[in-house]
Picture (tube, rainbow, N blue to C red):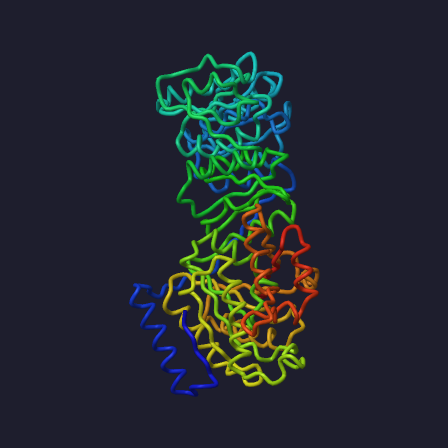
Length: 529
């Protein structure tokens, strides 16, 4: 923990403070690295066919896989072949090819149709041959046999090293979770009836889904990866096969066609809904949103995107819990608690509570100690390490903005890929919050820092443009308890002049609001450009 108390030091103390924290942290081996803010990309066509064609633009290909865009049962097994051929998965209707698909087919020499004549007609196949394309159909009597036909094609191209089993009826979401793994490892997804499969080899195999979709018989020849629901299975698959991910793709969890076509990119696909647990995104630095995913789901997904180091700047003791509690918890999940810092700007002596008769005659030092005691306990509950706390100690009636600027500049220049998170420069009503937010926003606009976010009171969230809004929520009970436990530290009143619940007494309404929010939400926004 590093202290800078303006009221006892002046300019010389400021220099000592800045020098001491720079020396201490550089001794730990941190260096400066200029990295731009994390990225959110959107790929959405006018329909699923055009979205698939836009995904194809990301691939340098000579081969194409064609599946029925309205009946994806056969297409569930296409991902492994996509990886083996380095081919996009394009969508068609049963008898006609959409123009957006046809345009991409012109670039290919070889076209693989996955599915029988009822899902993609022979006349359509003939049309492709007339265009001078080499066409090969992979099909069976049913979806299970079609997946085996695809697997045998992969065998003929490059051999098979792993097998991924899913339920061909009830396991479509599980198939989409493993699809990018199949594409990246160029191995087959085998659709089953959930009881057994005729396609087995003496190689490493995985069963995707619980025992309600794949019987225990699969455990004799495969490793099971499952969860309580499709989201948890998806999370466990990603953690198993993409432990060092830097980018993820988002797809709807109920309409799975975009998950199928995006699997050709060989990157983890996160299935999302507004209420789903998105903590699996932690560690990624960028996301691509495929299709028309619910806006709430996207802004909650963005809550896990941070640089390698995250610094929160809280104007007062309690602001960090009231307005950024869940954001701090998410940042710790994303980059590790050793890489999350908090800078407390003021000494807290400006609270109106100190005008109450009980506190009117206490010393400045006692006021500061009262405020800092609850602050330190609260941020500990949020997961902040004691050594990652910087207290600038600025008196509220005489804030030196140079001290704040120096702290921001220090973190920017001494740590790799920093995300700065501070009060909003626009969507707030507190003058001090706005002033500090504007200070850091100006540093961003002048290219002195490269990545910043701004937290806001919940009452201001509706005024923020949706494309800029980020919503951090508790995705599980552990995250929720971290925030609620921090809240309790500000309520604690022992009436002993050590813990007096000053934070809660100052703004009881805000504490009651966050305590009653089932998701203990924090709202942030990206900077306006």
